[in-house]
Amino acid sequence: MSLSSQNKINPNFSMSSMTDIVFLLLIFFMLTSTLVTTNALKIELPTSSAEALKQQTLSISITDDLRYFVNNEAVEPLLLESKIKDYFNAIDDPTLVLRAAKTIPIEYAVDVIDLAYRNNYKIVLATQNN
Image 1 (cartoon, rainbow, N blue to C red):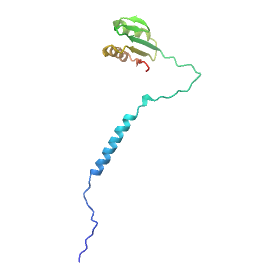
Image 2 (image 1 turned 180 degrees about the horizontal axis):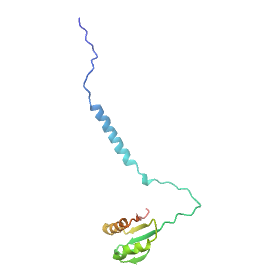
Image 3 (image 1 turned 135 degrees about the horizontal axis):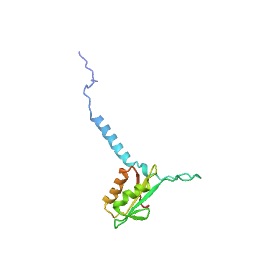
Image 4 (image 1 turned 45 degrees about the horizontal axis):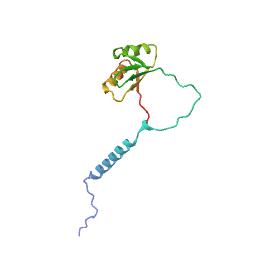
């Protein structure tokens, strides 16, 4: 009389459970990564009696009719780079603030951004609060 074991071990490995876990992790990370917005934190900063750090900035404005202004002074587009270089001549860490009208073609704003990158200036795009 030969008795056979009822509990035979199956030597095959099923990948279906592993793929289920991988897809669940993928969905989890895709959903949680879209919920993270580090730049949108609304925090109330503490106050200080120390003076604010004075940073050398220069405001460049582009109006709807494509006129350029440097610190509210009208400048021809061809003279813009030389005017900025004259202003930032002896400043270590210059910053440009670009105030472009929202109706202008993007190429005019990109020209100013390109000018800033060519001369190693920091550039900030000014926006209006809601």
